[in-house]
Image: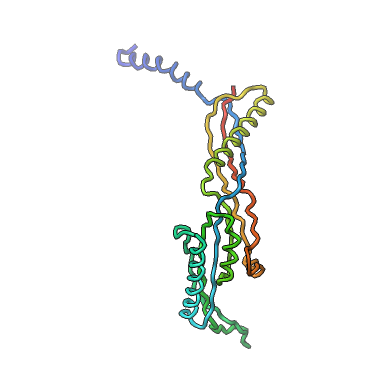
Length: 238
């Protein structure tokens, strides 16, 4: 053999076992499952969305009226023990209101009749027992649009951890069932990922403001928050 080609032939011969070995390292059979876990806990905080809407002939007059009403609401919240850090303006909207009339030619005539100003305040209530009282007081002072309650937890870490553990245990149980049905067993975890679903907020319709009593507190039920975790787990099959 040519002296130049001999080293190349030897190198190729030595590489063949390595290539064959690399081909044998393909991933073995695996099981992919989804586990779900849920844990519930009573909420310890409420977040209120309080909106004041005022209407006037000019934007300036509507804003002034709105400012006075919202200032009274904020003062009442602070007097009830709500701290500055728990009061946040969520939005201010100024919009014209038109009256539309049909004309003989089929078009419409738009007449500007007023301006509407809406100011929305987000209030975190850490003493959840005060929620109904604060809602009632806010409506008395001028809150007349929007409205919503979100019951949540200041620190849900522990309950979310419980839901995670349940989700992983659920995934492991499903994988074991599938493996046994296939005549094999479950090995180590290859990959795991998580999807967390926070509790759905409990909303209160705006029209319910009109039905609230003018004295005492609005009837409010906090119920329970359900924290849900979903995990996608890939197991090795033995």
